[in-house]
Image (cartoon, rainbow, N blue to C red; front, side, top):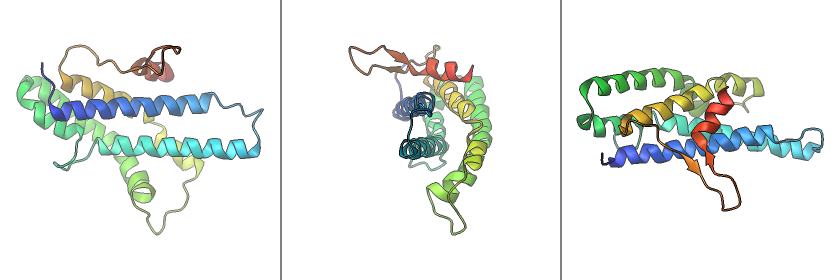
Length: 181
């Protein structure tokens, strides 16, 4: 099946989302707190915050409702005619569930201190970030599954990272699954 432009756009965004998530997890897991200086710890925390902010923005923009923007909804609109009716309705239900799942990120993070700077917004506390990101893996996994359904290939899309000829090839979907187990 020929992929539609909108579906290709969300597939690319999904690949970028998985890449940033992989970087986020690796940044957390590979930091040696015992050997770190205070400046190292400071820089590490900034790196984590930047990656969290990027993940939040990516997850939120996939839920955009503007017809002039690439999003999961636009991808479904463009591919609906090529999908069986029951499948399109199933994807629509998944999108509604995803919208409910990502709504706290939109209202408490993106709209409050990322995309806009609310006059009452302060620097988010670590506990706030933990609360906002507790469903992060589920949100990313949902996006990956929804994009799979829209692509309509019957098999999961492969998101492979080839950093170079000397490094092992990474399956970013598998890395996500490994982090959730």
